[in-house]
Image 1 (spheres, helix red, strand yellow):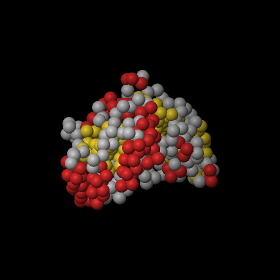
Image 2 (spheres, protein in one colour):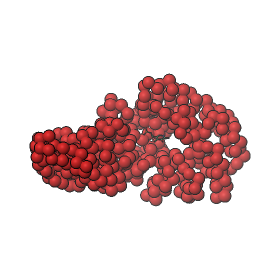
Image 3 (cartoon, rainbow, N blue to C red):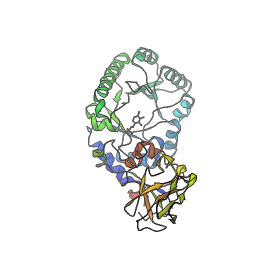
Image 4 (cartoon, rainbow, N blue to C red):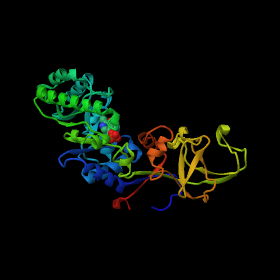
Length: 373
Ligand SMILES: *Cc1c(COP(=O)(O)O)cnc(C)c1O
């Protein structure tokens, strides 16, 4: 990759391939793999990532909302796409685009059946989501009879899978809770099989689930963050490769006298002679104000340069005192070092939030895929 001359998010598709193969190798060859590409594939590029995952042999894709799935279909993605959190207002367009809904409440199920009937659907693929302890979205176990009755004798929809989601799969202190979730899920899925007289496939594991509870892989796993290079644990992060690198450039260098201030609200005051660099990215690009005032650092010529003062909408100032750098030099905001996980932790958040927050103003460029060169 040539040195950047502006702010870009570089997406390394060979890193995605490495991470996919790493996770795949933890699983039985018969276990299906669903790649989660919601939120622009964790802030990267949903279409490019989906294309690469299809090429690598992923069985399923998932998005959060219907319109994310429609964008993928418009880009020619043909894989089955699970919509994790659809709203009834979109059921018709969802069906028009062959997107497969997660149905998670009696009300949503009834509404979906009504729309499917109106549309003349036959055996439309749906997935039933059960709540086993996250208490966020999902049927409760005692909805089982209602679901079975509602589905009995109808021809409009077919239940392809039953699934649930873990609340703390990354946390060793929550092993007992997670095992209870898995046991509850097994019990509910078996009960549903019996009540419905069919055997939909099962899935409960996210990335940390794959790493910590491979015995619960059932028929499919759903991975997001691991594909993008993070495993919620330093030892795993060391074996994965970050897909996204946020790069920028030094726009201007200033020599600051002692007791001068830098930036809005004069939030930073120099104690001695300092050299500062101004970068063309700010909170409108997804680097929020919480990273300012010394919380996070970036890499300039291999050295750590802290963010000083308040992050502005379109600019950020860093302290480059003692670093041999000039205007036009490349700056790594996050990537290999600091990693997105380390950068995020400086402001008490997680890689997921940092990555998905990189705004659409930042141009995405791609490396590691022969087809894009
Ligand atoms: C986002 C999401 C995932 C992916 O989780 P990761 O921790 O990123 O692997 C899996 N399942 C559901 C239901 C999700 O919402």
